[in-house]
Length: 289
Image (cartoon, rainbow, N blue to C red; front, side, top):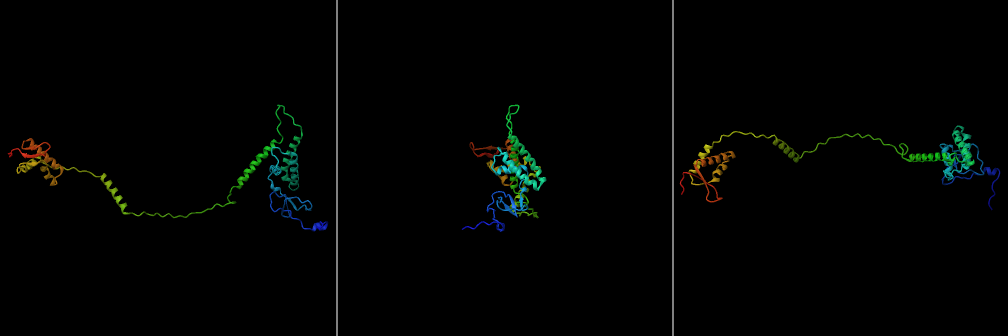
């Protein structure tokens, strides 16, 4: 048969049952001898100095009020003021016992909650203008929603990586010595450099004109002596002799002028056997065969 429950001194000496759950999914109510307490014991004596309430869990009256609403899944736009006010006042009473200075800020919010609760108990009256009277909870709802937005934004900012907490900034000093490496010169580079020099030298080239004494009379005498030994001479042969001797173009021009001057003076004749046939030169005073 099952053992009888211990009573009296035996109950006090019996080991306490560990009420700490294996998985913590909600906020601890207090700390008992250093261990988190998630439920209020029903049959266990707790010394007054053993129970420590987490006052630092809330950052202000709005934080506490928002916690009470969200924990019980209340609609923030339709807050049950009687229930929330009672829970809030219970917490403020605990704060007042331990820290009266800290409780002052919470007492101000408590007064506001009591005022809103009282106004909601009064019958609803229309305003003088006939417009519907604003809900007494409207101002509190606006403050709660604005505070919740700011709190969520602060949590997102706190989740960002932070220098010194999540990572460290590395500092490194690079001691680099730069050494200039001269390129190697190949034969192609020398060829290109020389070609550039020659191209610039051609831009500075000058042409010097010298005066050369050429006598048409001397060339006339030379032609007469050359034609005196032959009956006919082809026109081009008369000039090719000078070209083969390496005479410059100026001498060939003077030689041609001498030929024209002899023809003008009728000392020689220029003939051809048929149209488009080669030209021939002969002396005018030589008898033809």
